Image 1 (tube, rainbow, N blue to C red):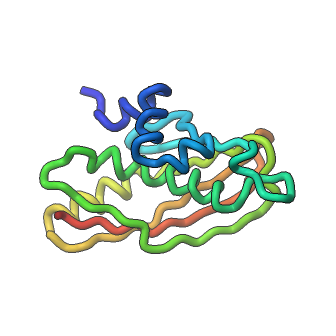
Image 2 (image 1 turned 120 degrees about the vertical axis):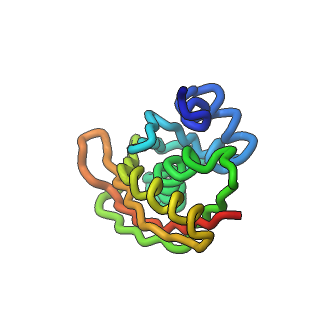
Length: 157
């Protein structure tokens, strides 16, 4: 049986409706999920009017939104409609911008198993569990444009 949340995010139309309903800023910024599994997620953002800064590149906050989504999808796939329910929260973020972000940028997070372990531990212990997940953004030429590290916290409700 396919993961119900991954079924939504990997379906272009269902995912656009989900963004419009739950994350309208991401909808307006044009974020899209290229592919998501339980182990890895790839999110794409492109330079356009709503994601730009005055310097003809993608605004850092738009990049952060795409990077965060590449990590958050891996968590949501594990807690969506789960019983007992689990809360999730970004508690910190670090970023490095290495190259001007123009055109399309793909953020990839491959830390799915870290999420699995932390969420399982949070459910079994009842205590808050944290992990750090890395999202690396590359351009069409494969050059690293930005690197984000998010610390996520999980707790059984």
